[in-house]
Image (cartoon, rainbow over all chains, first blue to last red; front, side, top):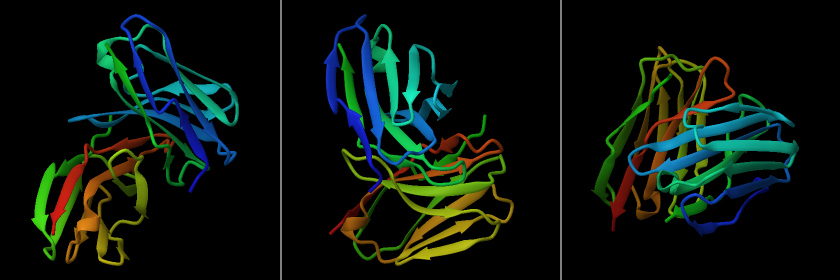
Length: 112
Length: 111
């Protein structure tokens, strides 16, 4: 299995608080992605990175920011969490633009 | 925005039956991938198809990429309870940095 770890695995937080999710990889892959998965919506891309300090928005980026200061770490931050951000968040990595995605096991975030 | 429509959304069958899941789009994709996801885990790649008309077999699973590279199908022969899971198709577009995912087909195979 690809070396990809998400932390925390579960988190409950209150509306209005900041939250940071971490994705750590040991594969030295260039591309990293954050997706959210919700019933009826499937997997939707939040942000992605194509190199250190190189990031871009996905289809549902509002309310989220990301940072990638090292190849191995990709952080997703909810500046002020809202109930609509309750979801399961998946990090994924890929070595090249035409190789498959390898996913972490997800972070289940509940915003109360 | 490229969209992928998967059908059916839910499928519940008995062990031993055959089934087909579809993934359709109005857009052309340079490649298409199928993933399977089990509860509490991330999706895992089953196959990648890149050539129009391509057929790939993985044991009892047969994957086909449409000639125009706009659609794909997954056929499972003699389904088993271990095939239960969420099947997702994902298409790569021009930039290929981003994959577009369908909403998935939730398959339940009953013993």
